Length: 178
Image 1 (cartoon, rainbow, N blue to C red):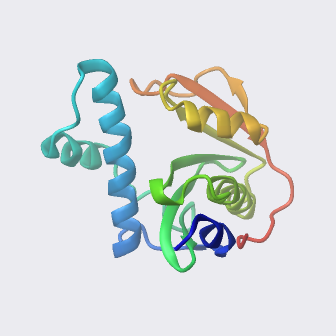
Image 2: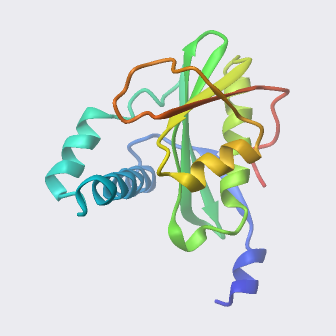
């Protein structure tokens, strides 16, 4: 498939159980990428399979279930290509979790569309604002959030891996397909 053809393929986003095969594979790939980048930056190596398994156990995705959460899976041309989780922190505040697009699908407008779908999902959960944390070495994520109107805020929790915190007020919910 040419790059031109790939750009024209449709994106669609839908809610899926966090433990569906496609969702689980995406979440594992997300965690592997962020862990590898962390260990590469701090220790000059990739994460071990044991560290990946430990991290997945320490940061489970079972909170991304109704009625207070959702896991969205983005499909590009019908192929599972990305995910984003949303959960309520309180009745008016949602949190974005595990935002990820697989490498072969990056640069094709998927991340922005997935982020907008996550914002719409947060609004449907009743949130008036959405927050997130990330690391400074995840420069692509930081740039995406800033480009989409997220502003830096004071920390709202104390996870050792969270280095920068963002928030955005939510408008009306929109369509999840893009």
